Length: 286
Picture 1 (cartoon, helix red, strand yellow):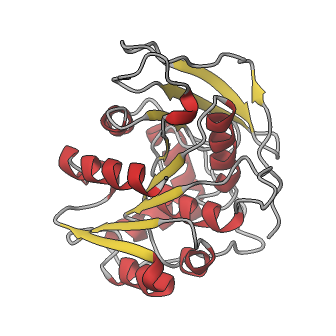
Picture 2: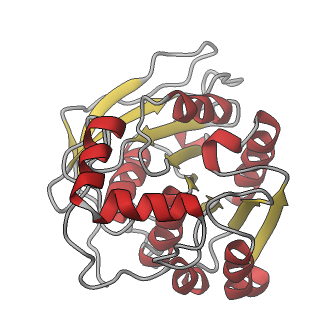
């Protein structure tokens, strides 16, 4: 699969600046290379200790939410707030979610949405970018890191410098748990897609994948040498522990694997865990 670099920012030319107090977030719509508008928010760091520092010295976390989330959901805002203690944060709504355009492809074309957000973070001056994805977003950050590699000439603007995947599936079409069987009904049935649209503010594409995208477990070996952290709950009701173990095995010695006492994705990730992820990402991103 060949993917071009992400498209330009639509409707905003603002640049963040370093201050000793917290500044207001910036909000704009980005445009992906396939023409979808993506609702995106930039939050500066909660604390900047050096008022003269440029954004290039500040890491930025680009957060990829789970299926049916969006940039305004309380659990997404909580994650963003937690990571502002470690750097700047870019959050966005995947296509088909919230105020973004298009329709959800449940992890396929969403790599283009993430690429647009990462490119925006770099346009704002940040040279150290960590992508952090949850559930569907966890699969997206893995595929994105495999497809967007740092170019030798330095011109690739959409690559990550560190990757964190939380509660991600290892393989597609998994139906081994009741929550995943409900999710497949939501995605594959017309009445399910109506529930998604009106019950979860998520507009789901009716077409099947063609071709089937690179799976997360196939993507993981292609991420090296970018640092990778795989996080999964030992009580995850969607994907049992064979999923993170498959991902870690595919990565070999390249990835860190954390099995945590938690359930699934953003709702289950407590502040202490988010803090440890923040520490890991800041160190790994260089």
